[in-house]
Length: 342
Ligand code: DAH
Image (cartoon, rainbow, N blue to C red; front, top):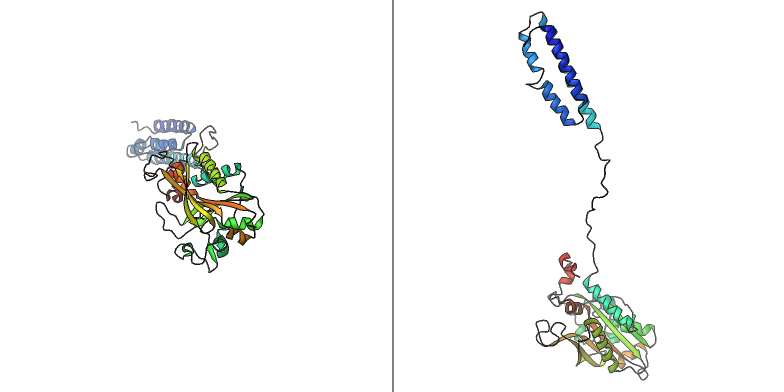
């Protein structure tokens, strides 16, 4: 390499021009880093000229030193300026692709129990029944007394009923809504009362301390047990199809006389016997009967003029049969894998 100072200086001028050129074409930050390496690095453009310092004459050495330092400071300054400017530049966020698909949103569905409840309500509404409601925190009078459930009756037991005070209970069934409805209107009455009920049952595959019932009541002149059977049969066919059969078995409830329990033929095997009906061909639904005249006395209806029938049904039980769900606990666990199947 030449040691002629003039030649050196003209080479340095060329390097400076090249540098300016390259910098003016640089648009990205990391390219300025490349320039830094190219011009200022250990093996960069200037380093070989610094090596010449020991080779030029003593008079020329300060001049070369000055030139080299000036250039070094200039390169460093230009690169810093460029980097600062590009870092404070706003990032390129002005482009937004509106054609990209959005993030999927999980939409909830109606709970299977309430889907079944809706279906039950629709069927009874189509039969001309109204929907009535009552409180879940109920008085002893409506939950027991006025339903002709005497003081010593086992369903009043502390083991079965959530007592809030001596006089207040969490209703153990929807039957108290019968009393409230009859108190508030005169016959003819055709109503159902859907809602939550509470009993001190341990949670297992078929029991839950909170569950749902639908109560039914019809009161008019000349209502008979045959009307009750006809209604239950029509309801069963609407819910489970034309092939379903019903049967009534004698039973006892304090608020109906005569009383019965009613069953549907098994929705899975059609009556042949399977695991769902435990080989019997029948599925127990709930109780029903003709309203006991003692109940009419409590609400001030003339029992020599009016007759009526009443029935209950368990919503969980019906939903379990309809969808063949083997365990009641699925309804309350809110596992999305279960709920999205309905
Ligand atoms: N309340 C009864 C229960 O929870 C079910 C019931 C039976 C309701 C007979 C009725 C009826 O209306 O007539 O077990």
